[in-house]
Length: 250
Image (cartoon, rainbow, N blue to C red; front, side):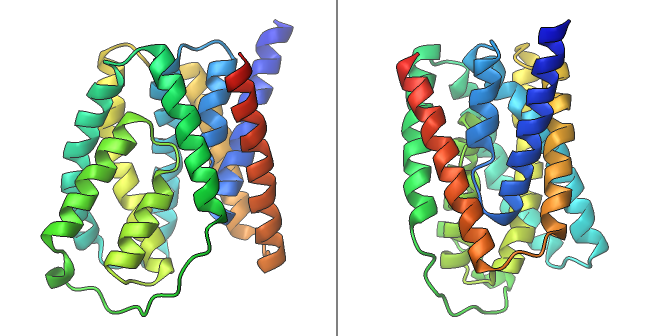
């Protein structure tokens, strides 16, 4: 019983940190996915279970954006179509690989995302988004991100920023709206794939979701300046490096 309580506290606690970091920086899944594996879930089950928290956190974020008057919902739905197709393929591919291969991919992805977190965000001259800006290249990029997100999800937010901000040249506030809408829409079918193959543990996922939704709620209400945001990013990197070492040494 004590062990179950400790696991529950860990899931909610790390979920709070991950949700908080996702709002102020990035990299929440780089903490939650390894945690589920450390608690004894096989990699593929952890991969599926992590989607429960992502879906519920995204629903909460989408609701907040709608109440705040989010715009261009139709365009975000159009961008979601290739991402959904890609996510179904990615989730299927994730279930075909061995646990050892998946753990190797996880370490490599976490290392890459750590570098991307340190990479300075370039300034891009933004513009008003219209349907004409949704080119074949943009749809192809959404499809490829969907494959990646369906496969592992970790760090997918960074990829969305790269495509939506740099290719579509829309402001970062609108990028965030598009990002949460698309992640919600493409994660739902991916979660269904993992559910169909019995790769989801609802108890773990719901506890993690409670924490991540709470952390995100706190994050949007904390007024942090550039130094505070940099501190959060630095803390994220320290935790990620510690997790990577743990994965490599086990």
